Image (cartoon, rainbow, N blue to C red; front, side, top):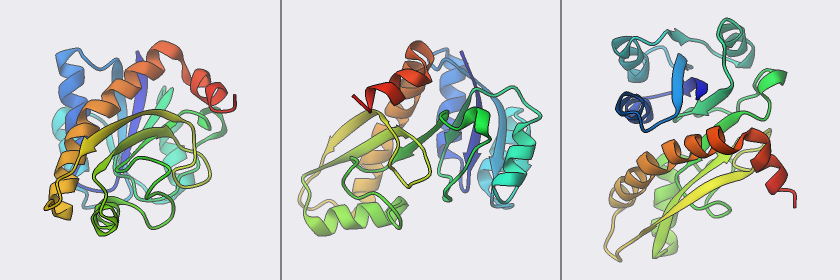
Length: 193
């Protein structure tokens, strides 16, 4: 079972998903703490409602000082919109979910609705999501898993976002369970072979 910190910037939809799956027994994790870099993030209010310690902090040093008070072995970025550098002991234990199939539509500037607008503008017939480990570059760490969704020609960026988020709700918990089963090092070693 993974002892997890959740970092977020917004509404906490991914936190909702994690909480529901933990309660249902289908996610092998325990949320130890939730941290937001936005003081008005709805995700902080949800975390408190769920009974998780919830903190507002800006910058890696402030976040890492909070994390030092908890027993954590995995950090899940859940709509956290900044490049994050974890404490050295957790430098390979930060998971992120990206709303596209990496290596397409990723890197600086490709987040949230910007991704779905770019997918629509390119005329893609598929999109999806990628769960990957984070490192010092946007969307460049080892991939844990990807899920593909079919797109229709008349899909709007909002339609694409909804389809991709549905896939994310399945993929992120599955990826955390894979990391729990196989270990963090498995994915970092696999990506270099």
